Image (tube, rainbow, N blue to C red):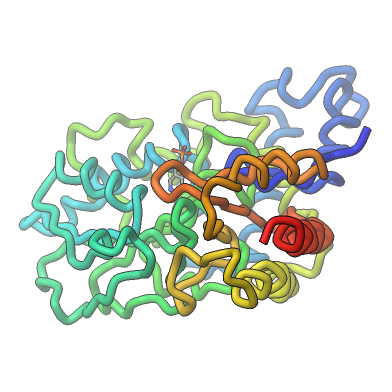
Length: 362
Ligand SMILES: Cc1ncc(COP(=O)(O)O)c(C=O)c1O
């Protein structure tokens, strides 16, 4: 069987080596005569898995001691509710500021506005999110409970190159589509969250990294399974958690460590995205959809100058094993999601295909 190069935005391709280990261990985990997903979340075998996931994440992301790692139900969008419920009450004014850099940032802001006084501190909506908006942290009121950003905009293909310095106001970042793809100074953030389904594992669960002093501010009505304190106190096992997702994440982290960790993967991600951006920049046939300085290394978006060729592009790409390249409906065109698991060969194959397609159709 040949595996395609899967450019889907998420759920996204996982390293083949990880899929193979999961397959081998699926029926018979550690010679127990049962699979890991068939045994208790309170078993010593699962304890080892969740402890290993924690330690690997701490090591790979260089997480300081005063942070907790939580595995929270409901994926990334559930955190759009959990973050305001846990943090907007930090100060009596119940204020939160959101930077709108894309669709997920807007959804997060809309959800938060149910819980307090939420403002848009900056937005790039007027230019269809082709850039990260300019934002001056000095413009924030001192009694703001937190500021929310989306660090990498999956749909549009932009990312924050540098993060804003928000001083005493906790910075909350949705890093769903880029956690562990580049070196990030965790200590600059109050909360980081990421749905697992891009760089970490299967969908449905979010990994939350939270500074300890931000626990304990939840509004009283917060369901206990959305209260980050419940997760911190019970090592994410207040109820039956998604043991399979945590196990897969542990395997992905082991793989990443074996690849040389975040610094090595960042170099590879820069090279991979450059293969595609170089084709786009050296052609009038392909049009970049976002400003150069704001480009993501995870989601590469572009259009064909002649949009009538889009279907042919997608069909011929698929015939070459280049899967799921269709852009999001908000942007159109093409999106190549090239998370950590996408090998360099996948980007090279796409770059070559793009050049050939241009030659044949220009
Ligand atoms: C940046 C970002 N935030 C949030 C989400 C939503 O994730 P979920 O479907 O896990 O709720 C996504 C999904 O693609 C995303 O890319």
